Image (cartoon, rainbow, N blue to C red; front, side, top):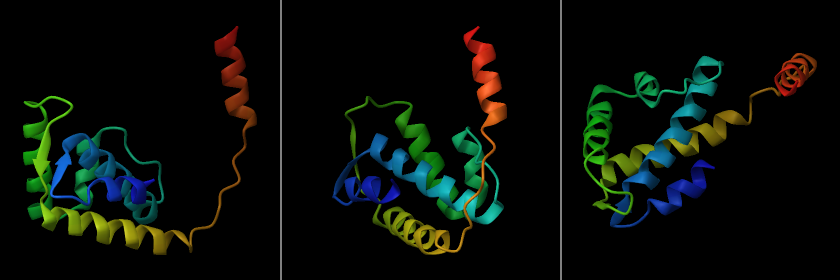
Amino acid sequence: MSKKYLEACRSDEVKLKSYFYCLRTALTGKWIIEKGTVPPVLFSELLVLVDDYTRKKIENLIALKATKGESYEHPNDWELFGFLEKTVLENEEKSKSLRSGRTDKSEMEKIFRKILR
């Protein structure tokens, strides 16, 4: 998924929405690889994975996004794009060594049936 969003960000002007889709997928992948747990839902909690300089850039985009509409296109920050590209490639490489989990779906199915009743 990250690769798809990364390609959407490979231009001189980028929709902030696309940047955040790419950031979220890249950082959640990094979280899974580095921490081995389910990533947090809150985007801000993922920012512990990045250095202070990159976090400040992302926080500035968050503040800007709050003031702009969905169709707003922002000049690409090629430095941030480089971080994303590097993270996506690292995630892809490191994910090859992850072992697949064996999920016990019975508990989820019980909860689902309870909700339906």
